[in-house]
Length: 311
Ligand code: NDP
Image 1 (cartoon, helix red, strand yellow):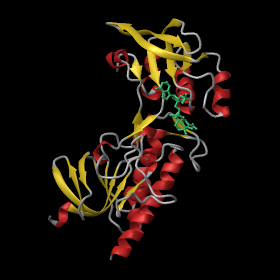
Image 2 (cartoon, helix red, strand yellow; image 1 turned 30 degrees about the vertical axis):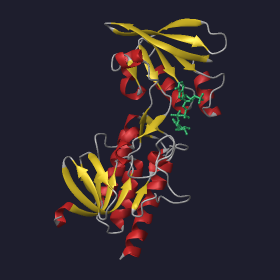
Image 3 (cartoon, protein in one colour; image 1 turned 60 degrees about the vertical axis):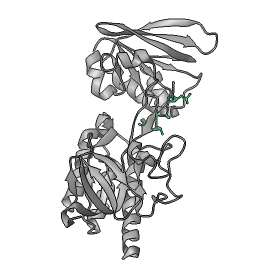
Image 4 (tube, protein in one colour; image 1 turned 90 degrees about the vertical axis):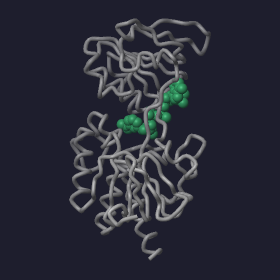
C-alpha cells in the first residue's frame, strides 16, 4: 500500500462526534482524515435552532453550528474527504477501508457514523415517502403552511417536531402509542401551551391514507378499546427514535441487540484494539450534540494514547 493511501487516524462520520474527534486528533498532530459521507453535519443539520449547546447562548441553526465545528477541525489540519466508506476490514492491521472503490489503510479508526430516523414499517408509509411522509420537520415543515399534519412519537423529538411544524401548519396532532409521553416535562409543557397542537394518546397508526396527490390522512386504532378513527392530514411526520448507522460494521465489531456499537465503560474503545466509537452510533440513551462531542473528544484521546503505546 503506498503512503498516500495510508492515514494515521481515519474518522468516519461528520457530525458533532466526528468533527470533535478530528479537532482533537489534529491538535495532537495525528493528521486525521475525516470521511464525511453523504450527509456532512449529520442529524444536526436538520435541526432548527439548537438552544442547548453550551457556549451558543443565543442558540444557532444546526447547519451553521456544524459548519463552525468543521471549520475548527480544518483550522488545525484535518483533511475532509467528501466520500462514503463502503466497507471496512478490521481483521488485519493496518485496518482497511474501502472508500468509493479505493482501498485506504489506517493505524486507528474512529467511528462516528451517527444514527438515522426510524419508520413504523407500514407499506402505506413507504408508498407515500416524500409525498407527505417525512422524518424531518425542519426540512419539510414549510411545505405544510396552513395544512393539517400529524407527528408520531412521544419523546422529545416528537415534541420538537410538533413545535417546528406548528410554525407553519394550522393544526398538529401528536399521536402516541402509550397513555403518557416519555418527553421531558419542559418539552411537554411547551407543546401543551401551543394552541395549534393537540395530542391523541394510546393510539397506534394502522395505515397512512392517500391518493395520487399524496397523503390525505391516517387511520389510527385505540390501544384501549380497539376502535379506529381517520385523522385528516397532508403531512405524516415520524419521530420515533433512530437506528444506528452500523451496516458496514456488522460482523466486524461487537454490536448490541439494537445494532449500536458496544464501547467499554467510561471509554470509546470497541472490542477491536485501535477502533474507537463516538456519538449516537454507540449511544442509545443520551443522543445529544454535546454528549456526542464529548465522546468524540474521548475517542480522539483514546486513539492518541493507543497509538503512543503502540509506538
Ligand atoms: P425516544 O427514544 O426518546 O422516543 C421515541 C418515541 O417513539 C417514544 O415515545 C416511543 O414510544 C415511540 N416509538 C418508538 N418506536 C415506536 C413504534 N414502532 N411505534 C410507535 N411509537 C414508537 O427518541 P427521541 O428521538 O424522541 O429522542 C432521542 C434522544 O434525543 C432522547 O434522549 C431525547 O431526550 C433527545 N432529544 C432532545 C431534544 C432536546 O432536548 N431539545 C430534542 C430531541 C431529542 P414509547 O414511549 O412507548 O417507547
